[in-house]
Image (cartoon, rainbow, N blue to C red; front, side, top):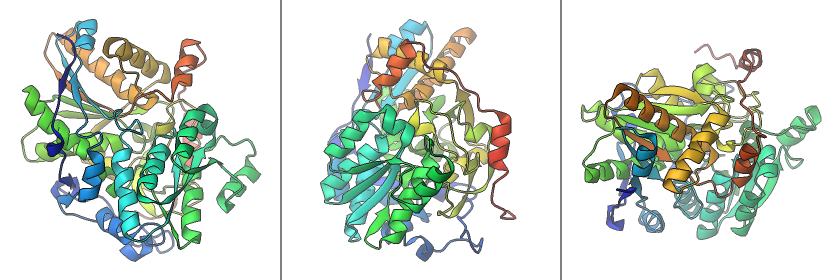
Length: 453
């Protein structure tokens, strides 16, 4: 039998997002004011975010209702399909059952639209007219640009320079939706000019791009900032992925033994796994949970779990997360969405509680897995998603070696249609593996802010 799809009707789009904070044995550490080092109050975040999203950021309610207009837009592509990858199982000759939740079917091509639509709606309801943001690979920028066009908002995107150069079609897509896109670091902000003065040939980083976008929002009372990952409200919006997947796995008559997601900031990983972890905390699921990051940007596996800034210019609050240091500049690997110095505080907390584990994949291994998957299943994954594919294949081969059945579910967070240059470079032998030097990580970590916590 070929690949099988488990489909839910539009009526089964979740009516509420799931907030795992309500069920955790202890809450994540609070964000701190960088000046006082005291926990932030909602008013401290108001220059950056509208109050309706700040309320979600600090919420401990288990369920937060999804607005009807957001659900109506979700219906354009949700519920997203869940597939059993039988052709891949056959190619691997494994007894494992491999399932993937496919988020590449959204109009923007990735999971990012799940939160972009929600954030744009809440900002419009708050009377906001302009949104500024950063983007790495361009998936988030594309999604927010599209969402802003739906709700009549102006969108300004600072795109990490290396991706700006590598992925011109992502930039073109953002501009087609009406966004203004600048390569970061730019000469448009104090943050960008300072970086360029020190490093004129800077390839940029998500930390730098965040600094530019936050600076624009803080200086203009008509503008708010929108973030594509890391913060609680962003991860909350992504839980539609896991909530649907729970129902779809029930349709399949199966239950996951292993849950896998790639993780840069942590949103698509958390979106899949936190609803399952909610079941696990109630004794209704026993799946192993694996977050996968690139070896070139190993925040979870080589970073420190401590308070740090989310941006390079230190304009953001301090959050407790796994971090490589806010001055860390990752190499220009093709998985642009995974080039971030920190991990979501909530994901970091899950790791600290032992509810999840982390591993790394080298760039060449990720692309080899993506090619193998594409030839079996007909979907070319985004470079970021290839990291999850690689670990899913490893798990299936491990089951084969043990001669045991194992049910594997991973999130295929987006397609690679705008990333084909990376596949061209891989096939031409131009890509290399990169293990970030320990001494450079140590230098970045030496600049962590003193918090006494």
